[in-house]
Image (cartoon, rainbow, N blue to C red; front, side, top):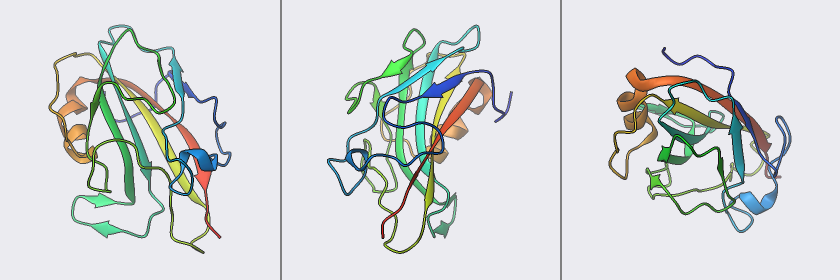
Length: 158
């Protein structure tokens, strides 16, 4: 399938698409992941992965651009939501160098950053090892990807 949007819908009770992410879910707050829910997963979905990425971060290094805030996978295919501050499933490593969620914290005065929360539907439930980077995860799941969509939140520090 490649990386193309599908009919899946991704929403959050914390913010709507294009709106500011509440400080509770940022590095300036308690820094917990927001609640996420999705619907209309493609037929044949056996597992999901979730990523949060800030393409506006002023970082360009080998194998990356922007900043990865969250990598979560091995989410069973019958799951259609994640609670706030989820502590289940398998965490990959963010660009903070640690597993788990690390909320928005753009440089002060850098303006508004866009944060893309992605849900990816896979036609495989083969377990993946903990600690994968976003790029390693995408490389492993690309042939198994059957649907995806995103929720866009924004954040800025003055």
